Image (cartoon, rainbow, N blue to C red; front, side, top):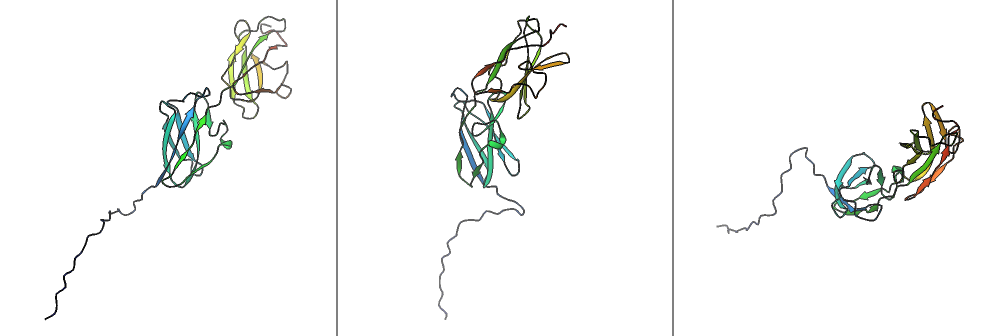
Length: 217
């Protein structure tokens, strides 16, 4: 009679069934803290992580202490941007996307990305007509010579204008327009002969000028 052998079978870990054509997206994390120009936490600021290859974006918002956390697709490269005020900025500390640092995010890893917002620059001044009287109601445009971005305001009754703390640092030309006549600082007739005015972070430059005509004439 043949001997009977008892076998003990131990169950292994269950395998989860995966439906056909499904996929699991492995993620990584970008976390950090954003500060305002004054060094205080930048609360409720929208943060964007943009995939440099696909342009896909992941978004988050900073908490009261300026911190944020973004889950992103793993093994991809991103640039990080945010807006404190009216202008988008890129990490690290630049308004230009082509100067942004690229961050590679490995699977299941956390990359820390901090930044401090740039203090804006500004222009202020007083404009007079040819006879020396204040030139009111004149359109003042401050144009970036590299990007063509413009900021605009209008002179007051005393001929003054003020764009303090409203313009990204850079090199600009200032123009004054009344009806169909335009003059550039300082008393220049066209763009090419206009002065290049360098605006630096956190400062306000004074650009006074006198029109070559009287606005009422």
